Length: 92
Image 1 (cartoon, rainbow, N blue to C red):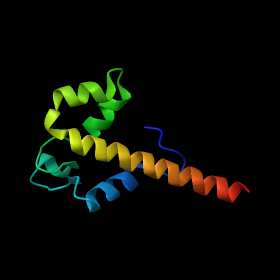
Image 2 (tube, one colour):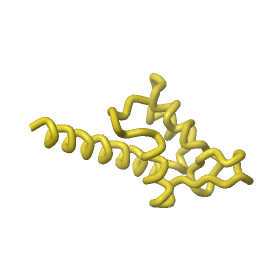
Image 3 (cartoon, rainbow, N blue to C red):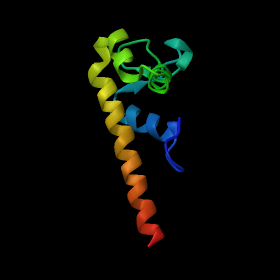
Image 4 (tube, rainbow, N blue to C red):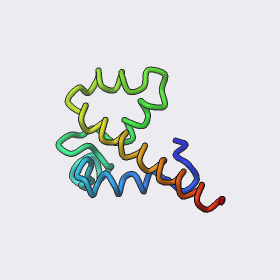
């Protein structure tokens, strides 16, 4: 998933973990990061976004994750905007 040069899935996962949107537990999906209270992996969300149907299909298939999905997109957008601002400042 192209998230910019310095933004990575690990950064996003850490941020989402800190906000209790996702978590990892060896007893749930062998420790794969999932949305809190579910067995839906974060990677599944990214896979849907990369597919043609994208967010709308994810929300159809997992309507109970609407707020978590929107928060995840917000986190990604903010991280990308922060990176772009940093890149602009350093290029001046």
